[in-house]
Image (cartoon, rainbow, N blue to C red):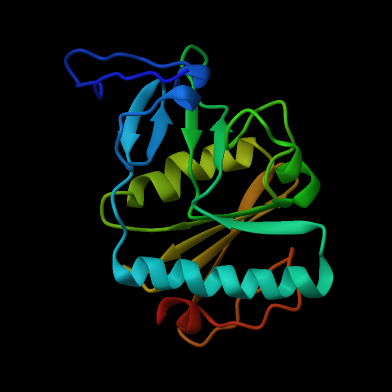
Length: 200
């Protein structure tokens, strides 16, 4: 079934359930996140944004092939249902996420990891001027509530990479800049600096 709805406007909101969101198709290639039932178009990233994602995709994939062949890394291909809001659904599409291959291959109801499924192992978001508050606040809270082991915030604006590590039920933020090597609990053999990530 395909649902064709106009994008909700601030003065006349049409709110979608997660099922509506999964079935939504407006006939374009626009990708949407779902924020408390409201479709939010995802803007096209800059060339720098896409280079950062591509670089980390390759780095993570190499580490997965070496030490976790039962995992997979996906770039903007999988959404994550958020625990945000009780009345209306929220679904985020991280720039990158790492999840078990078996879970990925078993999914049949659309490309959304729902609240009753295992959360991703790692998520990565690349900051843009329009999303900065969300990456550092809203998504930080949401991904923490989902018990995602590592949340990377790659910030080309402030030229730093923050790795949020789940420790005792909350995130501890570790900030890296310039030539500082990034430390990942999930990928301990990963050998990249903040500068290498940001200069791509």
